[in-house]
Amino acid sequence: MIINSDERQWAWFDEGINTFMQYLAEQEWDNNYDSNEGPPHKITGYMNSPVDQLEPIMTNSENIIDYFANAYRKPATALNILRETVTGREKFDYAFKEYCRRWAFKHPTPADFFRSMEDASGQDLDWFWRGWFYGIEKVDISLDSIEWLKVDLENNPEPKEQSYPQTIEAPFETLTKARYREEVKQFPVEKDTSLQDFYTFYKPWETADSTSEFKMTDYAETFSKREKKELFADKNYYELRFSNKGGLVTPVILEWTFADGTKEIERIPVEIWRKNEQQFTQVFVKNKLVKSVKLDPWRETADVDETNNTRPMPTEPKLFMVFKKHEFHKSENMMQKAKKRKTLKP
Image (tube, rainbow, N blue to C red; front, side, top):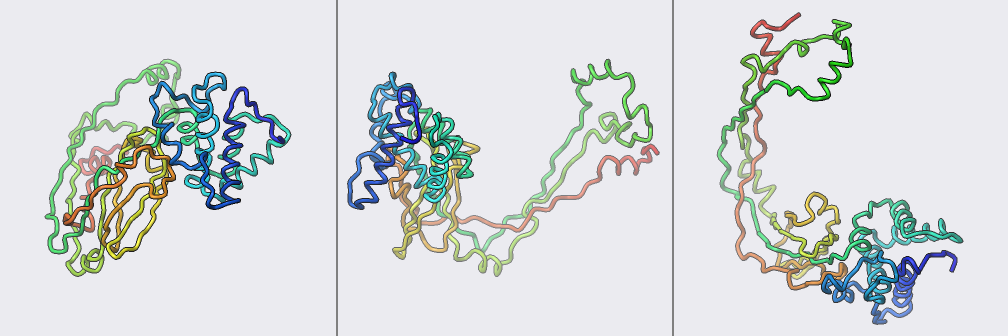
């Protein structure tokens, strides 16, 4: 009652936050309490509904189709995922308390809540608000394939000479250049000739320098057998390919089960989707043989389809060759070439 939100405009801003707080209270009061609103796996049915039955959480209260799911259940789940999976409890709790402190006895909007949570947590959460509160996309991350790789301890890649032709063309006469030429009567390099240098006069596109070659040797330096054995013999490389079938990006949580029966939880932050929101490939290095890999073992991301969260493990590894570095051949720059031809102006 201390923070006055406008429920008539944004139903979730009151009911969703209340439902979230109720979920936390239920779990703190009785660890065996089977809460209906808050656990991510219990919202997947609604999020997987036909698109004509969905609308964003930020929809005006009078236009919501499924009021209870949209205003109570989904925002409570979203805040729970934000707390447990995205920011972590410590950052979330601090930011949430800071929001309450800043907006006590005031009338905040959802934008004020979003900004306060980002500012106090020190995290960029734009993707989260956009996906969970302004969109209707769902979480469905698919583990598409698994490759098991090991280093080839016997063979090395053969050195390979590469040559890349480069061509310098005359600069295009841009509109900006043309207009400055009309406006500026005399440019600084024309007023003060001491500012002029080699590149003031040099026009490589009019000389033999217009074409050149950049050369390199691939796999020029390789590891010895002893080095490879020491560095790579015990390493297993697992290349996993993921795709975003639901449209809503999310952190990727993996459970690795090893041949010796031990397990490991590995968390990949949501930034993995930054350059490509549809798919990504990641290589994981493990010192033990992996028996199985499973996505979202705690069912904490609200993944609507768990049938694509695992794949059969390969029975035999593929070998790949390693090397230390390529060799980039040194070449003369334009000034050095001109000096050699004695065309370098004083």
